[in-house]
Amino acid sequence: MRVSDLDVSAAPYTHGSFLVGGYYGPQRVITVLDRVDLDDYFERGWPHLDDAQRRLLVESNKEMIGKLMQKKCEAGEWQDERLAGGTVKQIAISRADLFGIEPRLSDDCIKGTQHR
Image 1 (cartoon, rainbow, N blue to C red):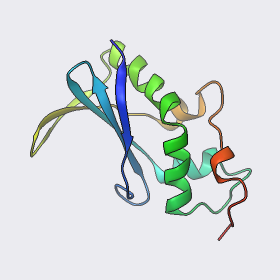
Image 2: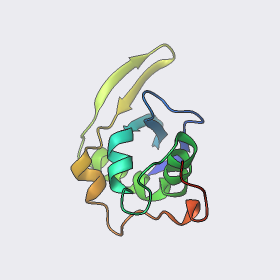
Image 3: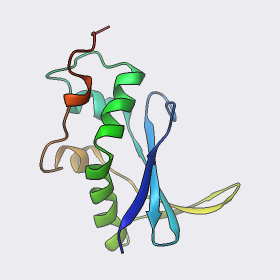
Image 4: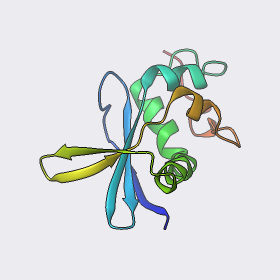
């Protein structure tokens, strides 16, 4: 089974973090990428990311993030989270997980945008 139908929240989830969701078979799986981790990951080229840039970065790298989510699903590394519409599998992607993604996530999608 693979994680499919990935989507990224249209607006920040909490405090500039972004939610990525998909399906592992019939089961809804989600992860939240922390704002500080994203800012630190892309710090060299983009020391002052705004929410729109963070979302573009997550959206353009969602397939790589999905592969990490899939590895965690295959290992059974999730927590059930009850939401109003049912139960989803919450996958924790740590700072170490994010920084360990190979190949490195791309920032090509925001090249040429203004720093704030």
